[in-house]
Length: 255
Image (cartoon, helix red, strand yellow):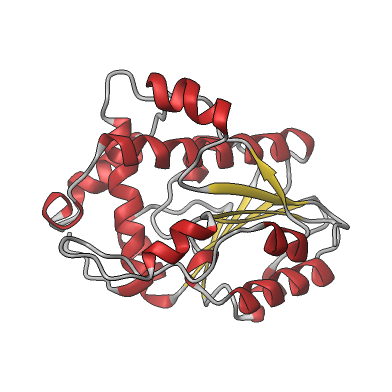
């Protein structure tokens, strides 16, 4: 099945591809057969466009594993709760963490929702909303009464920080009992992404990095990535707190 996307929506293919690279390994740290199946099904020059590096693939998998861990913790405490996945793209997290009771809401731009509808089956506990995460109208469809977790993977860093700060404030006001999970990159990586590279795929630049001031303004606490495979991801990165991406949690009532 042919898929044509550009700009920020195309990054969903990049993350999908790298998840599949890790998941294909015999010693994979991430089990994600649906990601593998999707890459095999989609007519897109993944390898030519993105290259594919085992180091980057494992880094992506560790990010995903941290999100999975937090979603499972939420569902353990709120088995009938709702998870709202902002900018979900072709993430297959629902099938990795489904407890048979969770209500799952995907919010993404119309072109991405159209691709997701073509490629991925949907059950009666899954809802798709074709809207920008920054369009507050999606909030009208959310029932937070049984517990609410909002996630934003690979999304916030592509938009101005002021827009992110405003969205977080609105979520906090509309859903005071909800927890928000998001990822961001260090400030230096964000600055580096804004400089043109010589060749190869260059995704849209990251517009901001998660320095101490921005963490304070969002009321966000950092979460450690799991240990991975090999010397770097298994020992050096956890010891020195090195990471290509950082995961953050905003608890209910934080400011």
